[in-house]
Image (tube, rainbow, N blue to C red; front, side, top):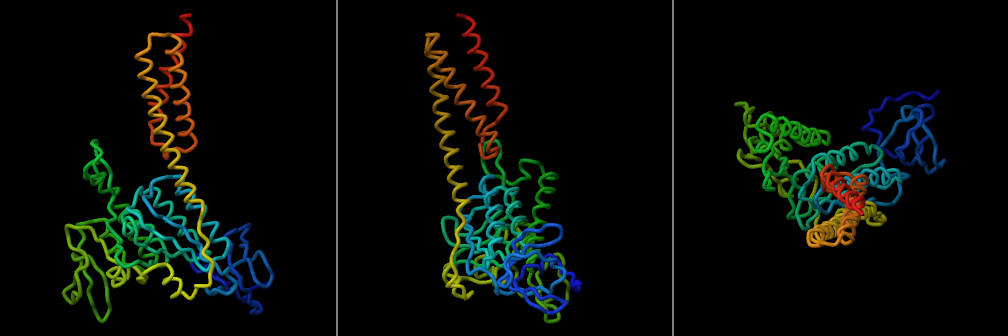
Length: 387
C-alpha cells in the first residue's frame, strides 16, 4: 500500500510525482481528467496512467511537460456567451495537453460581469497548469473593469509598458442609453449590495494569488483610500480608516474620489503585477522558453466571427422587415400584401431560431418578436380566408 500524502488541490499543479512507498519518480503532467478518485497523468516513463495523487509527493517543475505555450487572446470587450463558452473550453483543453504554461493576453475595456466571473472560474479550476496574464498594449491599452478581474484570477500578471489595470466598478446604462453607475439605476441600497459583492469578489481573486485585497477593492470603490504603511519593518496596504498611530505612511496609493487605476510600473511596485515586458517575446525569453511552440487558441476567434455574422444577419433582417412593412402599407394588392407578410414571417422565424440557439448573444426581445410574428400570422390567415 502506498503511503498517503494529503495535498490541497492548489498544490496539484505539478510535473514530478514521487511515490512515498519506494521513492520512484514519474515525470509528466496531470491532464485534468478524474475518474473514481484516480487522475490521468501523462508520463514520460509509462505514458498515460491513472494515479491517486494523494499517494504521491508532487513537485512543481517542467519535467515531462510539452514544450508549448498555450495562447488565449482577449482583445476586446467581454460581451458574448459564445466567446465565454469558447474560453472555458479552450483553457481546459489547453491544460490537458500539458503546456509549460497558459498565457492569456488581454487588451480589453471590460464588459459583462457575469461572463467575466465564468472566465475567472475557468482559470481557477485549471489546477493542472499555470495560467499567466499578459496585459498588452493595443486599442484599449490595458485591462479595465471585468478584464481587470480576469487578470487578477491569473497566477502571474505581466504588463506591457504604457498599459494600465483597474477602474473595475460596475457600469450600466440608463433609459437614455448613457453609461451610469449601478446605484443610479437600481437605487442606493440595491446598487451597493451588488457592488459590494463584486468588490469582495475582486479582493478574493487578488488574495488567492497573494496580492492586496484592499487595492483590488479600491479599483471598484472610489471612497476607499489605500495607504502603504510600515510597521516593525513589515510593508502593508491598509484602508486609511484603519491606520494605527505606530504605523508610518510610505505612500498613498488610492485617494478618495477616484477609482484605483495602476500603470504597469505602479502595479509592479505595489505587487499587483509581477513584471513589465515590452512584448511577448521578451516575456518568453525571460522565462527561458523561446524554443517553445506557441499554440494559439482558434475557438475564441471563431466565436467572435460567429457573433459578427449574427450581428450582420440581424441588420439585414431589420432592413428586410422595414422594407416589408413599407411595402405592406403601400400596396393595395392582396397578393403583394401576402407576399410581404410571408417575407416578414420568414425573417421573424429566423430571428427566433437564432435567439433559441444563441440566447443572449442575439440582442432581441423574444416576447416582442414572437408577438409580432403572431400578429402577422393572424393577418395573413385572415387574408387567406377572405378569398
